Length: 170
Length: 160
Image 1 (tube, rainbow over the protein chains, first blue to last red):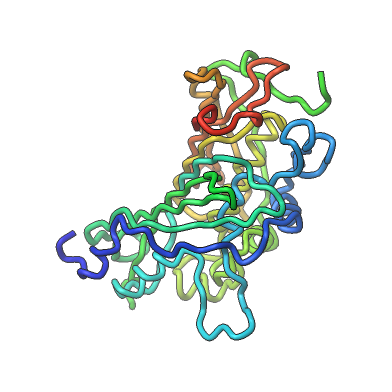
Image 2 (cartoon, rainbow over the protein chains, first blue to last red):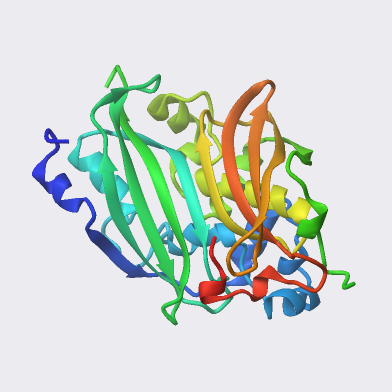
C-alpha cells in the first residue's frame, strides 16, 4: 500500500461524510422497490400484518442505501453529489475513470420505518495493490457504511468492495 | 395461527432446498430497479454509456436492486416472520436485459444463538443459463415456533 498517495492513506479508518438523509423514509419508495422486484411480502402491503408483526409499517431492510442517495438535481446545487462519496474520491485521486462494485455485505439492525430520518457515515478500510482483471487494470477497495436512526440506534451496516480501473484503451 | 405467519425454524433442516425463482430480465427490470433504489448512474439506464464507457454488453442490474431481489426471494420462502440479519453477496458477472435469471438456494445450517434467536444460514445464487452470476450468503432469523416473532428482538437480543 506504500505506493498510494498520502491523501488516500490518510483516509483509511477515518470516519468521513457524516450526513443526514435528504428526506424522511417514506412509503412511496417502499412501493417502488417492492414493485421493481415483485415483492409481495405483506409487511409492506397489509397494515394488519405490519401492525401484528412489526408494530407498524417498516421499509424493506435491504433499502438502506436508498435513503441516502442524493436527488439527481436540487435547486442551487453547483456540483454533482455522489452517494458513496469515498468511492468517487478514490476514483478521482487514483485516476481510475471506471469502477464497478463486486461485493456487498449488509448487517441489518433496527427496522427502518416511514418518518425516520437516518444518518450515515463512510469509512475506507483498505485499498489493494494494482490488479489486472478482464475489465482493465486498477485497484480493489473496501468501504464500510454505517447507518443509524434519529434515536441513535443502529439500523445497519454495509461493506462494499469496489474495483476502480482503467480500460486498456484509456 | 395468524394468517400473517410463515415458516418456523423447527420445520427447516440443513440441506433443504429453496424453490427456484426464474425472472426474465428486460431493460425495464434494470431501469425500474435502479430508479427505485435512487441509483441514477448511467450504466443502469443508458446502454451507450454501459457499452462504451464500462465495456459491458448492455445496462446491468445495480447492487441495491440485486439485494432487493435476494430479499424478495428469501422472504417468499420464509413468509413475513422471516427477518434478515445478514446478507453477503459477490457479483461475479453482470445480469443484463435478455437474461433469464434463476434464483436457487439451500439451507447451510440451522441453529439458536445465546439469546434464543433461531437462525437459518442459506447459500443462495443467481444463475443465468449454467453460469453463477451472483453468490449470496444469508443469515435469516425465523420464529422458533408459532408463538415466536424475531421482529420483536431489539438491542442485545438481536445479534445478526
